[in-house]
Figure: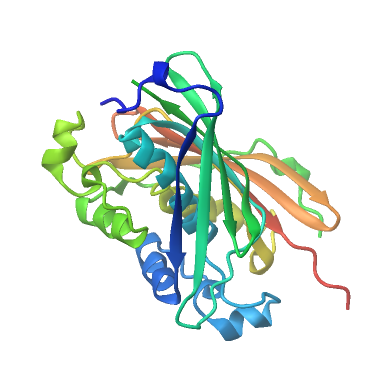
Length: 142
Length: 150
C-alpha cells in the first residue's frame, strides 16, 4: 500500500494539517487498559502528587500516539510510517475539572529523502508547553 | 546509585511470542481515538494491500516494553524502577504490525550512564515475526531520577 500524498507534490516547509486532541481522565483510564500501562501516575491524583507531580499526567506513549495521527491522517496510510521518534520533554497534566487537557500538534516537511521518503518534524504542546521534543517521522509517499 | 557498566551490550533471550489479535488492535485504536478503517476493518485493510488489519504505529510499544521489563527488573543491574520515567522513544519499521502476527522481542542494553545523579539506560528491542522476518525495532530510553536531597 502506498500513501495518498505524492512525493513530487510536497516541498521542504510544506505544512501538514494541524490537529488538537482532547485528553480527560476517562481517556487515560481507557488508554491504560488498552496499552497495559497501569502506572498510577496516569489515573491516581493522590499517588501522582505523592511522587512530586502537579497532578495526574498523560502517558507519554498516549501523546506519542496522538502526534503521529497528524502524519498518518495526512499520508492516508498509517503503514507508510518508516520511522518515528520523540523525546518526552514535559508531561501533559490532566486535571479532573470536567475539561482535562488538549494536545496541539503541528507538523511540516523538514527534508526530502531518497526513495520517495520525507522527514516530517512535529511540534506537540499542551498548556503552552512543548511536550514532545526531537519529534520526527519518516514517511514513504507515493 | 551507579549502574553496572558491564551491562552495556548485554542481550536477553527472545520473548515468548505475543499473538496480535484484531480486537486488541481495535481496542487500542479506539483508546487513541483513531478511526482509520485499516485498523478495524479487514476488508479495508485488504483493499489497502495488507493481509489483515494493521496496528497504529505505537501499538508495538506494549510488547517491547513488556520485554524490556526483564532488563529493568534484573536485580544485578540495580535500576530503581520506582523512580523511572520515559525519556525517549523511537521506532523503525520494516512493515506495520498486523493481526495474526506472532511477535518475539530480543532486548539489548545499548547504553548505561549516570548524569547528574540520574541513571539512564537505553534499551533496543528487535521485533521479529514467527518466520524470523524483522518487523520493527524499538529504542527506549529510561531515566531513573536521582533521589531528592534528604
